[in-house]
Image (cartoon, rainbow, N blue to C red; front, side, top):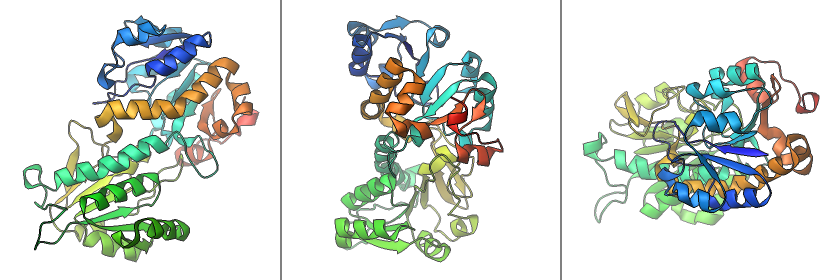
Length: 371
């Protein structure tokens, strides 16, 4: 097969889907790999490094998309890329379709096959989302702490505290991969940390891991409201795989927070998990907006800020499946790797992921009726 690696064009998105290591493996497997010029530069990978392992560098995105059987990306296609869609083209990337009605329509109309990293599932785990959740959780605290400083608009506190002065109060909503990474980072800084989740087994596990370094609370409106009110930094990470994120932090809760506090919404890719950030993504160029005196950080590609780390971490997770799809084709790869089945969100003009169909008003068609 022919694999195309286009340059990412989302605002301040410097990641690249394929590192030289996986490109070499694909070439040795007998495939052709086209890489758009400078696609890896933002991650510290030069064109010559791709050429040395057998890739062919093409000057334009149009050439890469036009020649490829499989497009191997990081972020969802942007509007300017929709014109490259065609029937049978396989797009393997993060899609977040429940929050992207125009993209979904373009993919359905063009009859592409869209395989979303974020819904590939092994048991309860999301192995292709996990590495970026690890990065985003860590970055959420790092960025949140930055915006708590007075020059950046925050209330002017040091979350670590100093002798004789209290530490900052960090509240993490959601105890999954991103939430746990955020909590670990906040604990490392010396903050007071509260974790909120509906999964009591997970809260018990985290209590055993972190001991007295965290407080755990069951997720309900009252507990969230009380915790958010007293927080200096809130990191919201709630996730329903493939579906729009629930809006657990309401406008009324935000109104009760102290001016200059910060909310970081890690779930913005899925539409946002607070009422103020709902469908209001920001960018690394303009990362925050202010409502009720509270700084809201809702950057839709948080890991893009640390592109070198993120690109290698993501490729480590996604590479085994691109090799299988390229070698066997989609239909056979789905038999070999059944965890890929929920990853196929659209195919042959149909929506094949139930949550996306429900959230966007499409008829849901099971994948086995389409492929």
